[in-house]
Image (cartoon, rainbow over all chains, first blue to last red):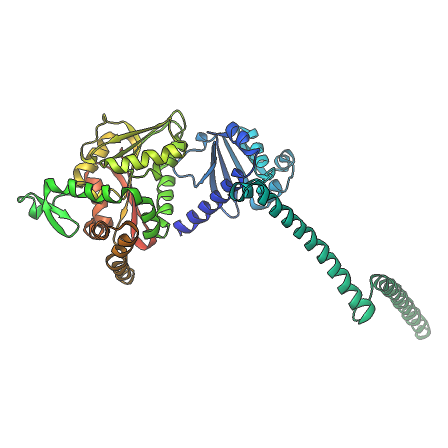
Length: 216
Length: 255
């Protein structure tokens, strides 16, 4: 078990460092952060993670036997808040809502988030390192064209499939038909409600008349 | 490796499964490591399928090293632990990479320089049995896959306890005895049949890797090593079995 979590952390650390190595803006940010330590305490699931910055990336370690005071900043949050934070939610708002507890140097948390969210990978540059400038550019152009072709094909396929199912095979209703049918259903629902109310009123009136006839 | 009590009168100790004169062991171990130094990292990766990196990573986590600490990495070999420690202690701290073997130390130094590690790392060729440092010098001492090659383990543990600061930690990462008989059997087959073949193919040196397997079997088991650490003056000694006990990480504190 100890090695499983160690393996996961090692994999995560390697991935992040590999990504940072391909971001032209990362070295200057890492130089500013080098030597600083951030402790993340996650609730549900219970997990503590120490991030140590160095000029070439970061080390992810499970803190053991190290007091919180030894870290530049300590952050306590749950998984949902971590997701919101990485999704770009305002740190101040999360703190005011009581979902994010932080002490120490708060700019370190902000810098960590910026470092991870603002990753801009120069993958063409990495290709050029292996293949040379011209082949890398041709390959990158080819991949971009392929990507655009993929997107266009996907859109066209979706439109063609929709047209076939709705117009030709008539297996599904079109959007306009669906809207009309929904309006009709709503109208029917309202009419049924009114009828039910009228019936209830008639039942009530009948019961009152029968009660008057029985009475002397 | 500590001299076998029964054979101490004859001044012999074991070198793998062989009995050799006490003074001969260090030079024979040195020959093994001179021979494997250049391909040590590749062989480690091959033999352990890369798991040695996780064992070492766990050792770094358990070391609890902080910026400004002094760390001694004994038998540091090619500097895997030193590399991590040098980042953790920062420019105010220091890491001493010590190894008795000059070839290993040279490979380790070159590798660390290639990784841009320099300012806070020192290199010392030293025998673990008589460490050349004043008392109470280091906040943390590690010895990874080195203790079994030491001629007198008790003397080495006493020496480490001496140079450790009060409150400092000693971590011993070493091959050990898997408690499961099934795993033990499979491990024996791997060590004595496959390992020398890999050594022959990759490093053209089957004998050194046969010695490796034999020395692992001659190394004390988890409980014995724990008792040895306690005898050396360390307290709160505990160990964690890794990969089914093939390797154990012992940790003791000097109080």
